[in-house]
Length: 394
Image 1 (tube, rainbow, N blue to C red):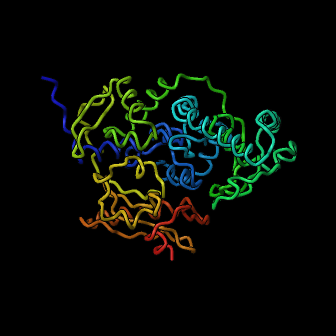
Image 2: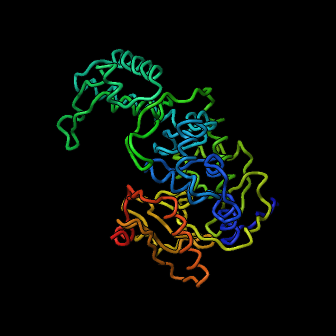
Image 3: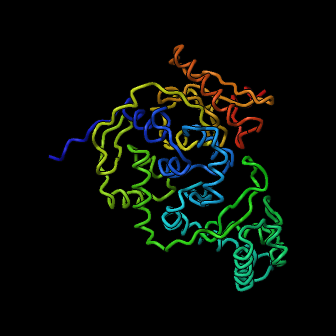
C-alpha cells in the first residue's frame, strides 16, 4: 500500500497563509523585496495594488512608496513585466528568466504572429520592416534608459504608423505600431515597464530594456516557478495550479513531478506541497487583521477559495470578470470590504456570516488607520471596482 497522505485542514492552511504571505504582525517584512520573494508575484495590472500590497506587509508602512520606488526604479531588484495568464505582475528581478521561459514564450509567439498577420491583412508594411523598426526602438531605449511610447516615436517615427485591425468586424479599430509592438516586446521579455509618468497610482509608464537574463529551458523553468509558488502557497490543488499559472494540465503535472511534489489531503480533495513541506505548520500565535487591496496576490492566490472566503461573499467582493476588490481579513479569512472616501478616510464593513468579536473590530480599525497613515493625501480608486467598494466609497 502507498504512504497515507497527510490531511491539512483549514486551520493549518490559514496559519501557513498568515506566515508565508507576511500578514501576521510577527511575519511582516522589512523591505519590498522580501515581500516579493515571499509571494512570488504581485499583481501589477492596477499600479496601486503593488504599493498597497507591500504596505499591508511592511513593518514600517511609512516607507512603502519610497522603498517600493527604490526597488522598482533605482536598484531594479523588482521588475514589472508580463507573466502568468498574459497578465502584468511585479516579480523579484532574479525570477525574470524563470517567468519568461515558463509562461511568456508561448504567449509571445502567438502575439507576434497576430501582429504580423493583422498588419498583412491591413496592407501595412511587412515583417522585415517591423523587425527593423523593433531593432531601432530597442536601440533608442538603450540610449535613453527609459522612454514613453511618444518619446520613442520621436526618435523612431515609423512607430507612429497606423493600420486598421479586424476591418469589417464589430471590434474593428485603428492600431498604432508602437502600441502593439511594445506589447509584443513586453511578452517576449525584451522590454519592461519603467517609472510611471505620475505618482505611484499612475497607470502611464515609461518603457525600459528588460534586465539581461539567460534563456532557460521551458520545462525546467516551469518546474522552478512551480517550486517557488508551492513554497509560498502550498498546499494547492491541481485546479489552483492550472488557474494560477495558465498552463495546460500536462505542463502542471510535469512540473509537479519534476520537483517531487507530495500529495496531501485537503477538504477540496488532493492537494500538493513541495517535498520538504509536509510537516505540520503552527500558527503565528496571535490573531491578526489586514486590509488588502483589490487584486492582492493572497486574495487571488487560489482558484478554490472556500477555505478563506465564504462563497456568499463573492458577489459583493468581485467584479463581473472575477477580479477581487479591497478585502478585510481577520485571522486567515475574508470578513469584509474597505474603501477610501473622497476626504481620504478609510472605511470598512463586516460582511462575514460567522461574525467577529470586539478584538477583531479593534484590530481592523487599527489597520484602517495604518493604511490612512501612509497613504496620506493620495487618493486611490481600484481599477476594477466592486459593488461594495463603490457603495463604501460614496
